[in-house]
Image 1: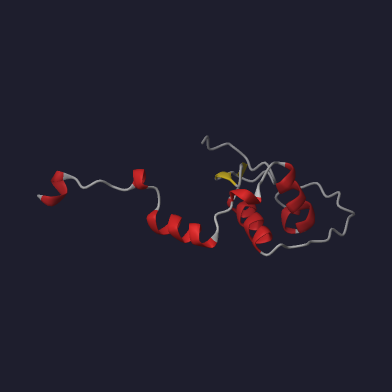
Image 2: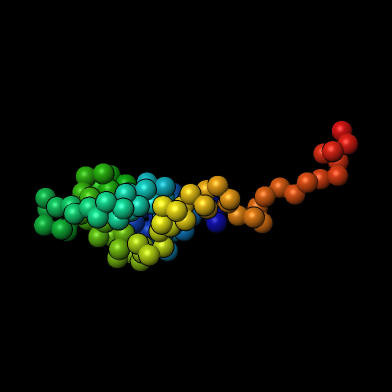
Length: 105
């Protein structure tokens, strides 16, 4: 991922694809918490806030609406069991393979 890529929700520096969209860590966590607790938010400005790095902290309804508008999907969330399995086992291809030189130092 190029270092200049920006979060499609708020414009902060993106950390990768999360829930089917290129987002920052903040929007990833916000979306995860929102869908996990089935949160319902209310906008004080009639649902018309322009989302940026400042407003993302001020209006949760518009932030969640923007998350969904850019294609973030709750279906991409691991169940709690799958999450624990994924965290524990990780990606098998990323595991370090034993090296002959490690055993003979």
